[in-house]
Length: 58
Image (cartoon, rainbow, N blue to C red; front, side, top):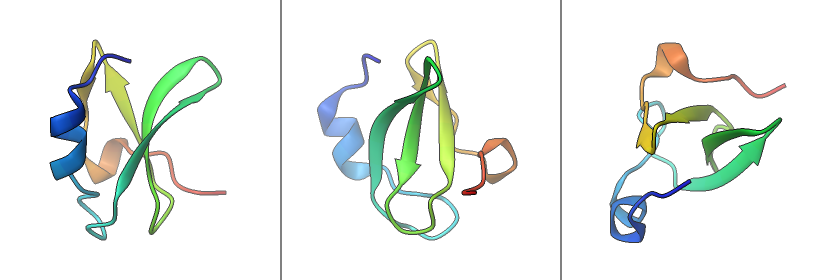
């Protein structure tokens, strides 16, 4: 994942406004919310911050 660290410092979870952390799950890049646990996909180094696209916490 090649996302600008400055961008990561300002974007937040669209669902709860929690902090996002970069993670790799099953070989896929994601941004995981530290608040609600939603995991947002990163496609071609672009975060897809849509609640409908998020993987919900188990």
